[in-house]
Image 1 (cartoon, helix red, strand yellow):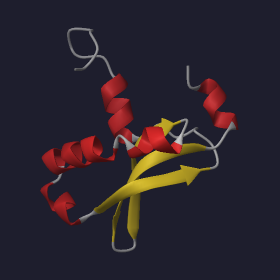
Image 2: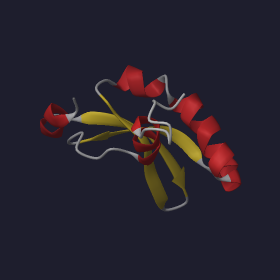
Image 3: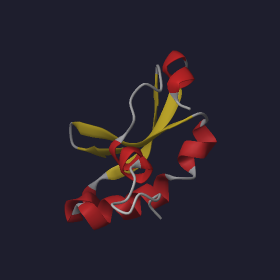
Image 4: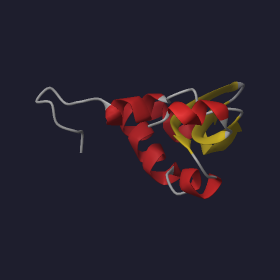
Length: 86
């Protein structure tokens, strides 16, 4: 599914805090697709890390989509019962 993404630029939802930055969700094929996920990712990040209320959230473009961001990996992981996460 995402194998061909390793050859093309992709977008990620990112968080920045001071000199640190993280690609939290993605890859997405288009910038608008990544932009529409920013608020959802912000909400998920605030549930996981209370200090993230101080982070700046946005999008970044990467040379390839080879990196599968943490929130995306978690959403794609099967639940203990074997079904998809909701």
